[in-house]
Image 1 (cartoon, rainbow, N blue to C red):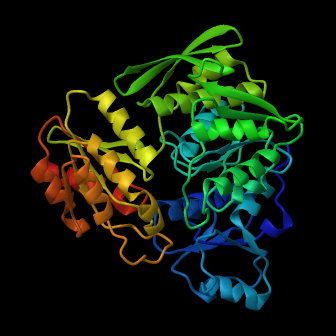
Image 2 (cartoon, rainbow, N blue to C red):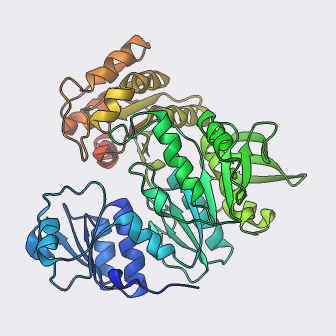
Length: 464
């Protein structure tokens, strides 16, 4: 098994080391023995976890945080050119490495599974990591969220399999050479980087084309974008294509998905035999993610019945319909959903899991560009809730776009018949929800920004 540290990664400095993708790479390097350092905008549990692994983590960005003997500076696409540490790296002639190149280097020599798709990457990658670990395979993994069980997003394992979330947002997934690639779905998103669906398809085709000769593409037979991609790559002679889903012609066919409260029972037809297993999170989309994970593991030669049993050990990822707690008879759940398809899937999952409960949503739009393109669809999705609170847009890496605000979503929601309240001061949300909620209700905090911080605050307010 290859686990050596690439020369450029012996003393890396990460700008934004606390980010989901960056921290995972930093953790694996630290576990392999590299002298890891970096900086982040604010203190966090992730920063402390990195320090416990021996990394040096500075809070705030400053030129003096970069050591002159650093072997490289690792950045994501979110790091701007005027970052003082990046400027200092140029002055010191220290090589700058994109995080995707760093991750590709870590996967070198291992049997890689790369999980791609507009939605569901983190969950599916996590399901594989948990199942393979449960089977004693001891994989390495890098995930865009913390597993609920181990509580970490990355691990350097002793086995020869590396499971990685493959990010299409900035085309970085094109850097990987997996033995197995999973494509869950293909939709238009990341509007700052992709102008059309044709550009999206081209990008995914490049990703699939990087699968090693004799490798396997596991791809949805149900989602229209994935079906179109399958038709575009069928002629790659060195590629084995395995489709999964509810379509009658799928290679791994979903026979039945039965909701059972906050879990689902899934039956698939695989190799002429029926196989039933439990998925310990609610929702049809999560059940289908588990089937994709099953198909990928089988492609690596792992017995299907062993994988099916191990997949039942998956208990979720933080921020993916994560129960934050209960107070005054009200359950508060956190969702990372920020694209209309994800929002609809999670809201429908909550509806199917709790048919007798009211569903209240606190939604924070993520990115001005996404809101500009998909705000109307976001508003329509909120019509699935009994009532919603909509916050101002979380900008993340973007500058404001004139005329683009949460009002776009709120207007669309109102047109769709939704009960929506605009809240511009996030600190007032716990009081607003306390005034709305009653025993038996479900409250869902939803979005990819800092809306997740409101869950504990809402619980505390309800307790009082």
